[in-house]
Image (cartoon, rainbow, N blue to C red; front, side, top):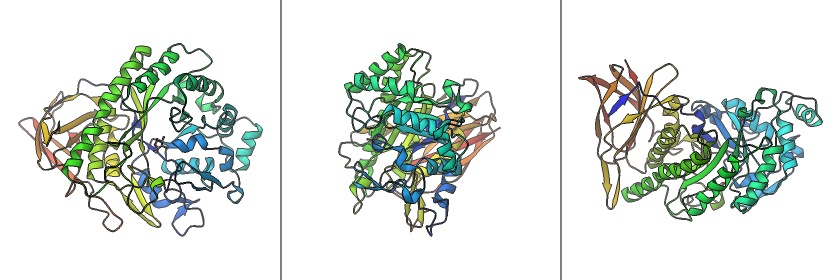
Amino acid sequence: MSVDVSKTGAKIDRNIFGQFAEHLGHGVYEGIWVGPDSTIPNTRGIRNDVVAALKAIKVPNVRWPGGCFADEYHWRKGIGPTDKRVVSLNPNWGGVTEPNAFGTHEFMDFLDQIGSQAYVSVNVGSGTPQEAAEWLEYMTTAQPTTLAKERAANGHPQPYKVASLGIGNESWDCGGNMTPDYYLSQMKIYSRFVRNFNPAQQDKDQMLKIAVGPGGDEPRWTDWTEAIMKAYRQHTWSWDINGLSMHSYTVGHWPPSFAATGFGETEYSQILKFTLAMEDLISTHSAIMDKYDPQKKVALVVDEWGAWYAPSLGTNPGFLVQQNSQRDAILAALNLNIFARHADRVRGANIAQMINVLQSMIMTDKEKMVLTPTYYVFKMYVPFQDATFVPVSFDAGTYTHGDIKLPRLDAIAAKDKAGKLWLAITNLDPDQPVEIAASLTVITAKSAVGETLTAPKVDSVNTFDAPNTVVPKPVSAKAQNGKLALKLEPKSVTVVSVEQ
Ligand code: AHR
């Protein structure tokens, strides 16, 4: 492996480490919100254990309230005294009741508690531009309008900051089954009228306006990206976007049928092969974006990604509950590496979903909480937030299982703001360790220190009863003959900083 620190690339936008919290199953209710009267320790209804865990991974932004839920969400139901809130339904996800107890103020309070920023998805499917415009005015204006006074009466005189605005969600499917042309006409209206009034956000780049983008690898998705980007090239003073969303889950086959636990090497290698398709998908859509936006003003925001498996036995299938194993840790690292390599275009990503849903960081059961292997990858990657990409070349080798051939190794490097060099290296091989000799150009490395995450088996998980099966452990390496000698355990993710 060789790393030339004199050649740097784009900034790895910290927003690629974003999270997604939809009103779905126990993602919000029980996962974040337990209510102020709960016996579970909480601050204004938001559970303290979850807040502490999320603070440690420095969540840059949280996408909310959906997902498909966003296109049925009406924000007015989620403000005002909690006991007066409308109880509605959540037909997308299990058909359960939606108490609306977690609304705008609770979401913003949660963000304050974890130190994160808002990525709000507005309702294009069943809402109106007026409803969305009023929501933004309610949240962001500092002027004494009736909506601002209502916000103050509900406890928040200061305007909120909305860092990112999603104009609809999967408008080609659950968000309204729109054609590209129909969506474009809607999107332009929302882009025009849904304004951010926060005085601190008057520079138009202070809020990302993200249009719905592609959702897979069929030809219709390149048509979709073409349509949006072609329109973007002709945008006028009256409407604009600076983000295009992309959704891509590692599913294998639809409906999701891979088991989240109790699998072997065959399913391990298959899922990793599926997940590596993210590289081609991003390259394909970036190339289309380059055609219409060579200056890369529009960010590609992969705002739903992660593994989607068969639901855990005994759970409501509409709640998308699945366990999280060492395979998911490897999967997360591979995707984060792909995003980092495309840092010039991919400037946002949100793993689905933060708590108790799909490839989550955290699982809860009443007062119990457990951190998943994926959580630890996000924690280990914190130094890469806003670091500068450094190209790294290496002999990846090959890991073979049956017909499947995958790179045995994957790696990225970056320099943080203090100038420290970081390496993240994944060994995909479930059985064989890998020994690396890393030569660094420009700097003289003496040693490297950091953490490695591996597990007894590819399907090892953390449970409420055994929460420490998959946890990072310290690792270090010395320089020998001017090269860093690193030994990577099988099926591991390792992050080290280089000491000079
Ligand atoms: O994350 C679960 C769902 O997947 C989201 O609501 C939707 O946008 C996507 O289809």
